[in-house]
Image (cartoon, rainbow, N blue to C red; front, top):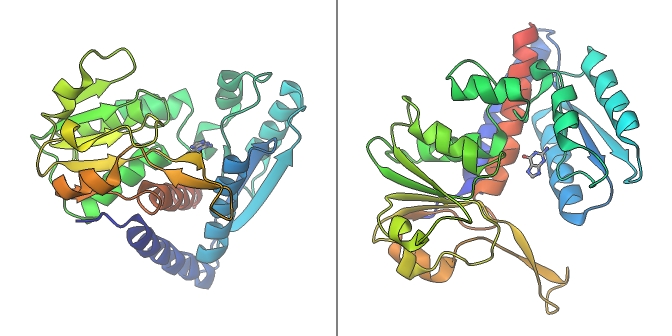
Length: 290
Ligand code: GUN
């Protein structure tokens, strides 16, 4: 079974669109998302462009703030402060990665947790880990939602997460182990220092791969009927393509899909889910102000 992120993401966007038109009829505030992007990284510009288009689709307002990659940390922090203090803005994100000259930690700490719809602020991350009300980071949230909507059981399953990033690996490992719906898994968080990774992946009922190495996960590494969630999106140069590149996931899809009981494609799997869950968080931020 293919876990169709495009289809589920559209379902979620249509649900949000419905709720927005209800808000319009009730003369409630229209959700407004802002995004700050620093520099001209092609992939980041594409992601942010998709986020803005998704806002248009569901009827949100959106504001895109583009800053030069030579911008000082102080000026970026000033921009964040003005979004924090702008009552019209319900939530905002700072697209990562940032230029090396800027301290990412300082930037994330400057975001008002009530507007941190990416869920990257330590307050939100900590609250999430403690199962308190918070914003859940969009990519892990999207994975949980995908499992939920395809009714994939996680309780009592062995889950292996590959990659320990703050954005995906670490938070999804926490969510899958929580005492909750689409939780209750036994989770093993693996990373670059893990010895004999195959030992773990071969025994996994569910694998979430978020390491960013194209076609890293081969069919010999997975067991029959495993559920495979591929979070990788790497641009691989391909001169035969109009864009000059192709997008590859972490999973050798052609072969692994023959063995898996369910698998997300790349593109069209986790990627679109991330965008819908960001919208969901923004709606939540707006509703919390009602
Ligand atoms: N860079 C890669 N993924 C993300 C994301 O979900 N949010 C932000 N702000 N930056 C990212």
